[in-house]
Amino acid sequence: MILTEGGTCVVQGAAVTDTEALSQMSIPHYETCVEVAKADLCALLEDPRGADLER
Image (tube, rainbow, N blue to C red; front, top):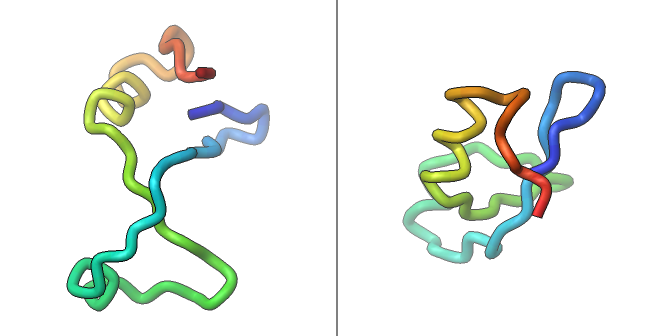
């Protein structure tokens, strides 16, 4: 994950291909879903300024 100066984050992960999971979401044609490790999300929520998210 990379924190941007605009207050957003860019994430990288394996593309979600599970049709059941995708059917539970409303995803615009120009977006995609990726899986993100729970540890990375927790690090971002706990301390976004101190987390080492650029990997």
